[in-house]
Length: 305
Ligand code: MG
Image 1 (cartoon, rainbow, N blue to C red):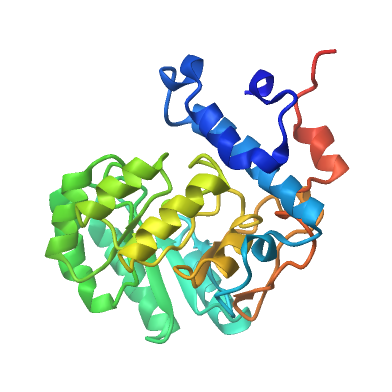
Image 2 (cartoon, helix red, strand yellow):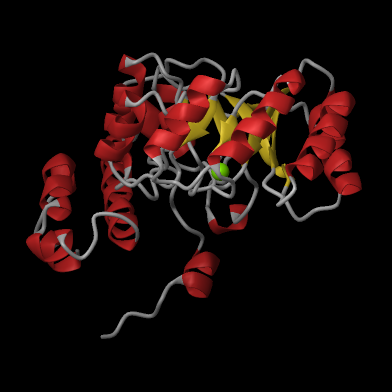
């Protein structure tokens, strides 16, 4: 993308998004995956530059706050590999000590009974007042999902995330029809049209776009508007650890919650913070993506002179 950006202006970010997204040499290489990740990096940088030039945090540059308090839900409590005792300990600490009102537990064992027993123990521990979401990361097939959901409806799950393979529209639509548990997905969808397909099919209730995978802020906004028009809530997936999404979430009316994963915080000059289960609103100009010199040194590839 770099040669296509020489001599261009950051103020033309919409035009540049279309120029890069439709670049003939790139669109047949891949309209998903690494091509979109690269486009996302450029697009986020352009929005960051424009907001910085305006002296405003991105949420203000976009048009102000519609979400007065942004709830954080904690994904770091419930990785699939951790033993049940540690899972319960993490859930207790997150809800009792740190003030989280929502948590997410990874599921997807070959035997779903294992997941069910773990979730039963979590629900008993945290009580009924805590939002409890689960994430299968695409591991199961349709009958396994349906059997699990039938059993798990008693646990009052907030959503079941990516229950099946990421591109399977009809399977998710069938599952959504057959269970009271809402279906969440979107972290593996790389374009507006993919979201439109899932939304039109009734295959998703919680829409989870990610600026780092979707082609950046420009396309995230389109997806959020699309979901909002159907009155579907948007809860972003934090491939950026939330640095950019916290701005988008405070701004967009379809968003009232955001995932929390506390990885690579040390890489950013202004890491986002959560207090009593709510995201603090960033007040520094830009999109919150400025890296520390140390992170640049450790992770940036040296450029050839
Ligand atoms: Mg997920």
